Amino acid sequence: MSHHVSIWRAAQLVGVSRGVLQQQVRDGTLATCDGLVAIDELLRCYPTVQLEESGMLERVVQIRDEAFGKRVRERILPSQEVLAQRVFLQSQELADVRRHLQRYHALVIELQQSVRAVATGQPEDAKWQALDKQIKRGLAKALATESVGLLEVMDDMLKIMTAQVTVRPSGHQFAVEGHANLLQSGLHAGLKLNYGCGNGSCGMCKVRVISGDLAPTQHSDYPLSEAEKAQGYALMCCHTAASSELTLELLEASGPQDMPLQQIGAQVRAVSEPAPNTRLVHLQTPRTHRLRFLAGQSVSLGWAQAGFDDVRSSYPVASCPCDDRNLLFFVHRDQQDGFARQVFAGNLAYGSQVTVYGPTGEFVLREGGHRPQVFAACDGGFAPVKSLIEHSLSLDAAPALALFWLATQSDGHFYANQCRAWSEALDQFEYELITHADAEAGAAEVAHAMRVDLFDVSDCDFYLAGPARFVQTLAAELNAGGVPAAQISVQLMEAA
Ligand code: FES
Image (cartoon, rainbow, N blue to C red; front, side):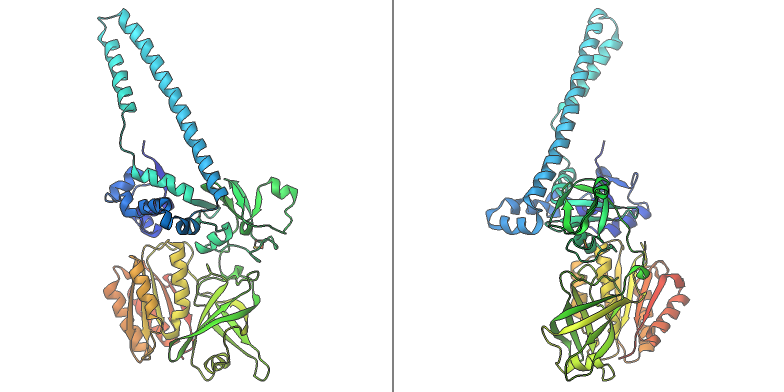
């Protein structure tokens, strides 16, 4: 019988995104059984997958190799204790299978001897002779040495190097790599987890372990009651997965309404100049007070300094919630915007204190969306779209992503390098940069490009961000092209 693996693991084994496999399941080209994929079926769809091509072999060779071993071990592998525990559990499973096999083998030999005894007493009865031969042939086949299934070997290796966590009741899954704790791993995978301090003192990341084992990663000050411990509760920020598979019960945020309003004092790490009229501001929150937000949301940034007016302006966060400590913002030259004036005057520098208030906004990824995702931005609308794209890539659930970015000014594609990097790194990502001085006429051009480039516009989820003239024109064009309003999310932004 073929070995079965989850869709998540299957995607890792053949090196494609989970969204691509899910799409194949939906269109019937990849069969599943109770949500699992048989290795034989996976090989039927991906016949050219070999251990060598997957990079897995190189990883193993690197681990053995003295020159690379230390670096790779530090980057990929979990701690020695966790590794030892996973190897122990796998060895236990193997020993169990071996014991069963030995018992079955002994049973078959016993039956064969009984058949022979009966057959010897009745040499003229062909049925007994045939049964004896059948057992002999079957045993020879079962004991013959066959080449091992490479995907099965890879699956066993992945179980040791990377743990798989399944969340109930949502069914979401995420991987735990290296030394990461469960909270970091879940956030990195794009899950909307509940948490606060991130260091074991507030208790907000408490979850119930349904199955599997945990290993502590740090000390916790939060006192779990004896009853909670007995029921399997633990803190995600202080534990990692000790077993290769773990099932946790926890409540995830369902949308922006579940995001608490926060006020955090952050520090400027860098102000860079991606284009003459744009500054990229990198803020870092304290390790124990991170911003909990959803991709696509905005915050207010406040700056107060003796001798200057207090300023406070709203900006979309241009980074992924999976890195909740490092927040990026694109600030555009705008004399009406007090915060932008200070940034362009050079008054914000490394170490400056900025207060972050928020998050606010409803421009977030649609829950459970399995359609191709299409993002369209006009000028500064790129900021929330960048955050959404990064979040979507973390979730790895969309079968394809496309970005159309309209610039109304000559330096409007201020982060085009990032688009190129996504496109080079990901098979399922396409982008198109369009320039037009007028946002409305540019929107019509974007709509035309979408009709040309996209296979079926009516089967995509759209996220549009930019000035009202751009967003409304493009939404109307999409509606006219057969896209239901429910598949279009919009974020109106002031024209720069
Ligand atoms: S986030 Fe505060 S205890 Fe885990």
